[in-house]
Amino acid sequence: MQIIPTAGLKKDFYDAEEAIKKLKDASRWIQVDVCDGVFATGRTFDLDLMGKLDFETPNNLWDVHLMVKEPSTWVNKAIHIGASRVIGQVEMMSSREDFLEKIKNEGAEAGLAFDVDTEVDKIVGDWDIVLLMGRKAGFGYFEFEKKVLDKIKKIKDMGYIVGIDGGADTDNVKAIEEAGADIVYSEVNYWKLRNA
Image (cartoon, helix red, strand yellow):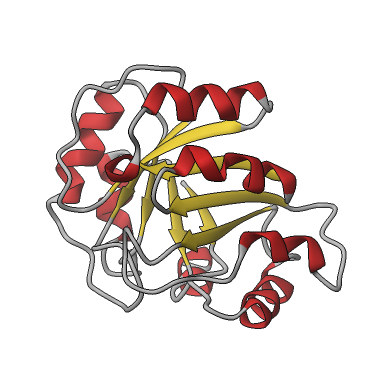
């Protein structure tokens, strides 16, 4: 199972920049969370600022998680900053097909994300990853909700790569892996999980 670090939900670009500096040599993939304050409380820095990093990241691949209203309208911004993978929250999409098409037309990987209380329905399309929130999306630390383990199994049975975002720690990561998760995203526990 792959452990991918996240730069986290940062309101200030300079905080995100510092987080990325610490992670850029530790992992090829780095997730950047984007929140507009509509889907989840709080807003993160403007995605356009990613082009202003004061250091080079030629070896990193950006995984951009859009927790925003109408993620399809943010795809161009994500691609502009060099995203290799763009994931959007299903709860905020008017058209999954439009979101998928926009990303695939740019040659990037596309993903769907489901919040912890959102039922996982039939998923249709050439999705590269299905991301399940392990706890309620947004700012703050909440424990992993065990009901997500059944969702992991359901998504794996559909044949998709499964990512878990939020709440993973050294006490539950084995159960998450045994349920079938392929990727765990973590900010707070990244170093512990990586060395577990």
